[in-house]
Length: 372
Image (cartoon, rainbow, N blue to C red; front, side, top):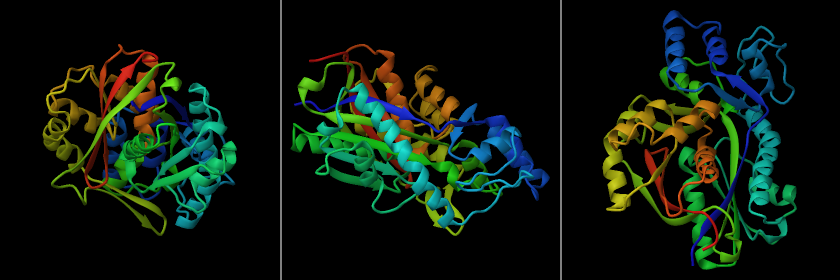
């Protein structure tokens, strides 16, 4: 019995941010001194990001200076272009309104690509760390997609950028226990809801990379469903680094969720990545790499630490360039691009994602062109 990712669907909000425009908006905030403006410019210009997406239309309009600010969903920017500081409650209220449609859009695309009807879904695993409510995204997905009310549901919250891999592991474990299961995994993150005037290094780095997006995967061990390109889910691993617990963290503050992303994160990854990957892969070869782009410097450190060729992380870099870091959804964007690219049958894919802790979540996949 082989469990597979049968399809991947992705979705982003309509509003798009140009990185240079967001840089100028943030650097122009009242009270930003010369050093802060210089740090903002350096972080944004070095990010290797060109565009990102946001659910906040007024933020996109203010960055582009294309229309007066004002967004009834959650005012974020004044007419004068100054960033507001909405309460955590206001930000979470916006999440409750805006996240479910993005969950549903990505899920519908994944189901359609796998030729799976809503009635055939037996399990749902949702993932998010940028908002919370109950009944939560898993419940809303059942209602919005008109899934069977008997669907078994699970939600993974607050696990950060690496959470899609544990979600796939949960789906694989479900399929191992029930070979007839059809599991819908959906990640959606609205990182831009927690935007704030960047004042220190962590806030500047976070402001320069995070974005909004959703991605879904249909997972099943039913061989009759494996009629197209798919990824076999071979095995998973989790590795906690010896340090970094305070260097990547995600807490709830009075004016939104607060991200700690210190300059040590890429350096820790660079030091730890070879040992962690060797423990996970052993003597197995790798044909393709799918690495979560926490930022350009993270990809650079993975590339150098593993002594990869210059083009090994091209897909990861392309996703970072076009979408930024959408937290948990990002690795599924990368896997979706690889699934559509048409790898060679039997290609081994090493999937790596990094989360708070500092935690490495890994998966070994095998690409298949069609039914076994």
